[in-house]
Amino acid sequence: MRLLLICPHFRPDLYAATGEVMTQLVESLAELDHNIDVVTSLPWYHRHDVEPEWRGRPWRTETTEWGRIVRAWPFPTTKINVPARAAGFLAQTALASGLAATLGRHDAVIGMSPPIFFGDAAWLAARRSRAPFVFNTQDIFPDIAVQLGALTNPRVIELARRHELSVYRRADAITVLSEDQADNVRAKLAGRNETDADKIRIIANCIDVDRITPVDWDNWYRRRHGLLDKTVVMYSGNVGLSQSFDLIRAGAETWAADERVHFVINGEGAARDQVEAWARDLDNVSIVDFGQRDEIPDILGAADLHLILLKSGLAASSTPSKLYGILAAGRPILASIDTGSEVDVVVRRSGAGLSVAPDDPWAFVQALEKLLADPEELRSMGKRARGYAETCLTPAAQAEAYDTLLRDLIPRRRSSG
Image (cartoon, rainbow, N blue to C red):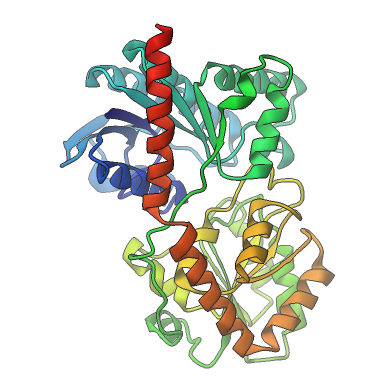
């Protein structure tokens, strides 16, 4: 099959977790002998500005052994400025749509959201080829923006919800990461068309278990940051508005007198300034910038315990992709997240850690105390985490799920004209 994938991030733009996810998906589909064109952004996520070596042209094209990559100018803005960010996404979508039109016909088109506008670009490309359009939803928009207070104008919210529904209805299939996300989309489509609910497929993200493997705890990352003799509790990922960093503050204050326990926040994002403001008063908290892609196994492996923090009500719209890297690294997890969400279910099913209700400092600290009191059990949880990743989250399994879906959709689309 000849496929087209439209996504906001792709190798080497891997500071965004979805860049890793989409790169793995394409490379795994290529191993199934598909020819793939990718329309994506010039690398920009790390600094929220196009990387210096990629500037100078509004788009670039490169040829690979499996197809072509076309990178468009992303019109970068910060996440905090929502109107400017929306305008940037619209401009990028228009540019991406024009570039996709130069790539010829395809048997199927996959568009990733967010940004939701990439669904429109993918739909247009699919119409030109008379091919099925698969809408890949990593986070559900506008729900996530409304719940975080980034969108507050009722008229804008209503327009965004209408747009969301229009993309769902135009898609031949909608892939989501979890059952709670599927329920979210299913409820919005309920009663509108009896076949709409059949569009929804759950296909979890994957992780490259050959690239991210368990490493020794006492590695260069610990040495560089003075952590060799510490029990390291780490949050690694986007330091954004959807995470409850007050829980780390509660934990750090609880262990302030214990020099053995140290909290590390490894990442950058819209909430980092706020986090740095209270962390200055705590000697047992370190805030570290993102590392390079090849450093990720050592960064994840430097922790004795990883944290996944998502504010109440957000799990139906977003599944933290950091879950997969932690599992592959063979490290235990303490998750503060909605009960019954995908992360909660995976953590409990795999035996990789504990999960508590979100935004509850007392429950979080109690669980943290239980975990830190039993280092041997922490190591056992890490081994179970790795075993789960090797069994359930491989790129090959994800690619096979998409391959099966596309082979089902293409004949139906052709027969419908």
